[in-house]
Image 1: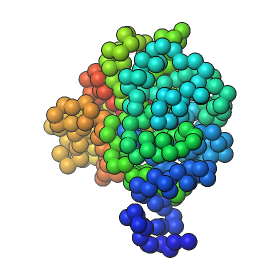
Image 2: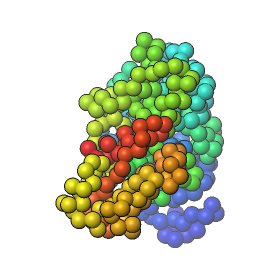
Image 3: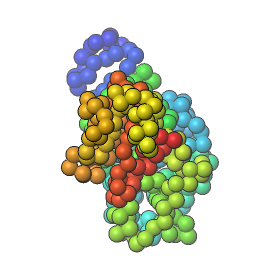
Length: 334
Ligand code: AMP
Ligand code: MG
């Protein structure tokens, strides 16, 4: 048994109450094979992974995240081929999307086979599947004989983690290991696409822009705003929230109520002239939507920890990843 502060070969310290952070894929594999949880990097956000075929290991995800059992998990593998045993039917449009965008920030909802338990899908007849685009996690998945169930590695309802340290800060006491793959390059969760009569439907806006999906398969319907629909709880009305109250409307009113020096500001490209600069963060001074998405959750965390009483976030133009960013901000404000 190592002692506190002992240095491991791969450059991490042991601490009895926290997870180790490192890049040891073999160790991650050993833990997963033993039914334990591991924090994993993906290009969207960090995941809390376990063997998707081991019921006890999957139950542990719900326990550690404090996640309600009606909220289904996404199943991850390193290729479409490895996903096929878990689905009954692959609509043509799903194959087109998978060929075009995997590995990538796209999750497909497909009719599940008997190999996937109801626990993973929250009793639904579809399973959410994805091939994530991160070299460490792809190497880990390639080394495993089972897929990984992995929701975002945050306590249920809170802001999703985009670095190993975010996972450590929130779940470190409850898991043994976090694979460190650096900052998530996309920064927001995957776009979720399901199929109705074989036609694609977007259920959650995310890291793959609607425009890109439509380029591949033509116009698609978006039902991501059906907040009463418990089938897609990434869609719950209130989600992705900081601890502080977040506003997206009526900056003047928020300032009148709380005082200008108590309002943290999350803007797109330009600071607000009505607030002190010290409490302002800009998602992308160059109006780059990708950069804005990458910064979103990290900056929300920073403002959540800043010396202000409330946060005001400015919505982005409704195009490209701006849609998904606005979706997260609206839920965080709900
Ligand atoms: P997370 O990985 O934390 O972003 O959460 C996964 C999200 O995927 C859930 O909250 C749901 O919104 C969605 N999801 C997963 N499986 C299904 C499914 N079978 N049907 C509908 N939505 C799903
Ligand atoms: Mg989540």
